[in-house]
Length: 460
Image (cartoon, rainbow, N blue to C red; front, top):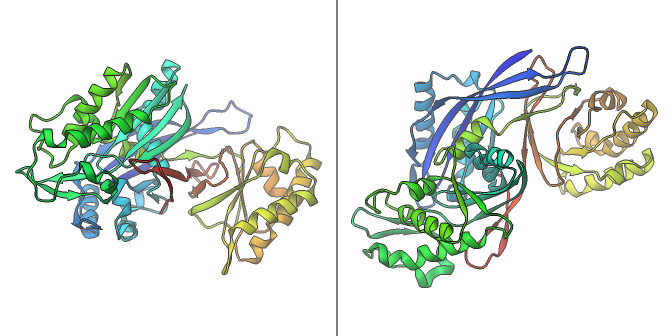
C-alpha cells in the first residue's frame, strides 16, 4: 500500500507570509500477515511561494483581505484547488498572533483550508515546526548530541531542544528583528509594546538613529538569548529571517526597515566568542512554513475503532491517565475518569475531550473487557452532554478496546503519545480507512524579555 497526501502549510508571521505545498507518502511498513503499520515515509516540498510582507492595516490589525489575496494568488500559481488539500497547517506566529483580528484572519482563509488544516498560533508548536523544518531534530540524531534550535523571526524567538533526535523542551522569548521598525531615512517608526521594560534603552519615535545608537538594545537582546542556552548544550541551530542575517547580512543595515541586520551579526559574534558550535538550518526564513506543510502531521496506529464520527475533530483537550490509574478495576477506573472529566465542565456543561492512556502489551480479553467497562462508565457523562468519547492509546489495542466499549458513537485510536494538557486535531481516515492523520498541539509558556516572568499562551 502506497498513498500520497497533499499537505499545505501557511505561515502568517510578524514579518512575512508564505506558503508551501508538500506531498506526504504513506506506506505500510509491516510484513505480510501482520497488523498494518502505516507511516509517513517521504515528505517532499513541491511548491514554495514567494515571501510576502505580512499586510497590516495598523500596528494592531492584520489586513485579512490582503492575506486572503496572497494565499489565493499562490494557490492559483501552484494550480492547487481547495478540495485537493488533505492536511497541513495554517499558523499565525510571533507578534501577529497578538493582533486584534487574528481569528478573523483564520476565518478568511477557511475557503482555502480544506476539511483538515489545523489553525493554531501556539508558540510550542511553532518551536517544534521550525526546528523540524530546519532539520535540527535530524542533526541532533545524526550527531548524537543535544541541540538547541532558535527560530528568530520578526516578533519572537522560538526555542526547541533536542537530544539524540528526541524533543526535550520548548520556550518562546519576545525577541525579534521587527520589534523596532525604521523608515528609509533611519527614523524610528514603530516600537513593540513588549519592549516597554527596556524603556531606558529605547529611542524616541521619529528619532533618526545610527547603528551605534541601537547597540545597547542589540547587546541586551543577544545577552538574553545567550542566557536561554542550557549549560549542557554546546551546539546551536538557527532559522528565521534573523538567521539569514547572521551569515549573510545586507550591506546596508537599514535594508529591511528593522533591526534584524544588526541583531543577527551581533548574536553570531557573541555566541562564537563563547565557544558554541553554530549551525545554519537547512531552511532559515522558510523553516516554520516548511515544518507546517511537511511535519505538522503524523498518523495513528492501524487498529482504530471508529463508529458514527464526523471528521475533522479539532482542539480536543487531552486528559491523561497515569499507568497506576488505568491499572485499577472497572469501578475504580470509572471514578477516576469521571473526576477528571469534571475539570472540563463549566456553566454550560462538559466539553468534548480526548482521554489518553498507555494501554497494555497483549492483555488477555478479560482485562480488556474490564478496562472497557471502567472507561465506558467513566465517560458516560459525555454521552449525556451530547458528545462521544475519544480514547487515545499508545499501545496497539485500540480496535479491541473500542469494540469492547460497546456500540455507541466512539473513536478509539492507538499509536499516539500525548500528555495531560495537550490538544489534538484528528482528520478523516486515510490509507484506505486504516489510519487517521493527527496533529498534537501542546500548551507552552513564553518568557517576557527582561525578567523571565512567565505567562500562559494558548492556541487560538
